[in-house]
Length: 186
Image (tube, rainbow, N blue to C red; front, side):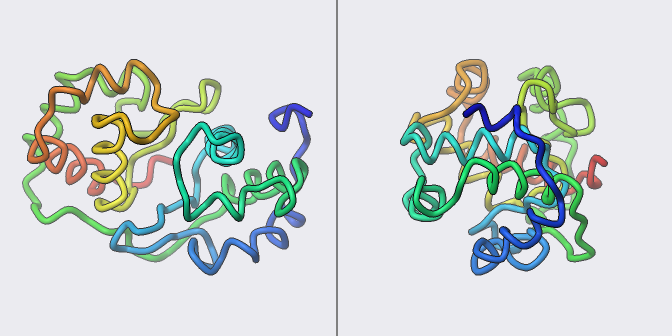
């Protein structure tokens, strides 16, 4: 079954998401420290891709594996949850980076052509399952970019690996700080 071809339903997704709330919280806002990502407003295609990549063992995420397993969630439930999260909103603040100065992070974002996939406003690309990164938690952005740079994430797009492979931790912090301070891109 190709999950992207299933028609998800928000009400069913809200119900199925109850099992995810222990980590991702009631409306998908995650944790402000970035332990768990902010999922509200994320493209359904991104949610489906990430869950199915974890499920297939392509994306390394030991905390998520038991919840994404075939016995834990049906393809229809994945589609339903993805539709629910794409439409979900939160009033809770996201975890911001430590520095209100974002010019260096924006310059790095521009120089490394991050907008090619993630958009000028960090809005991502639904059709290509490129995640929205605006208003994501600083800690999550930093950790995932480090995993991508260090090739420990497993499902990293080759263009993303090339974009971040030469960046220092400080540079990744600056980009993460910039993205965390962008307004929600919806």
